Image 1: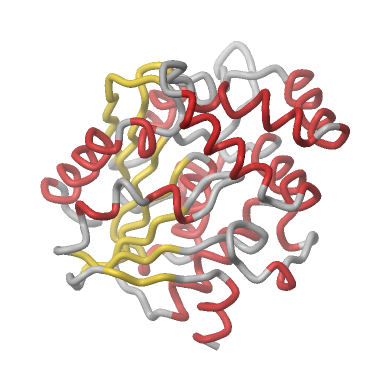
Image 2: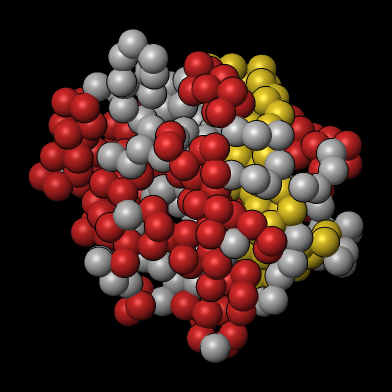
Length: 271
């Protein structure tokens, strides 16, 4: 079973410490997106990297559209990995949609998780006035999903700079665009629907694991008010706003992102 999951999710384990850090990439990405952050933690932690089924170098033959039509299917990937490696008190570090995937996994099996660290999280990307503004009207999301279906390359070319910001460093948006384009378009569309149409606000009170919310000051995908909403509705949560632009601070500003993670781990207690 272990070898099957290791191959399926392309699991890589590095580091010299005992405490496990499980890094989970966001939509359209893979484990390589953590390469600027993980070196900070290699001496003191065991680092587990993986690709969701359908992403990166995972076993694409294991993809099941029924399983992965909702975020719960991706949470099962996380739990499969936790059990295959027999992880306890794991510190889960998720980017973007993986923040909610990790939250769902922790609700299912809280005893396996010590901390949740969420980078650019959002429980819902859709506006629901007057009490919640996720950043997008539903018509906009539907248009983006339609563009993915009709012109996937054009969608990637448009959306990558919107996610990354940091216009003075176009190589970052280019890397994200290439990552999008390396993913099977049908699988990417399934993941996009599961991501951008999800609404996990009702699940937030069920999260018992202590959490850190790392929020970019200017993030059009997960605006500041979304981070504040999460902080309000997640028990035992900490909100850290870092003075950067864009939705991928682990790529654009890895030093600040690593420092926020390290400081939280060193100065917080488990549940």
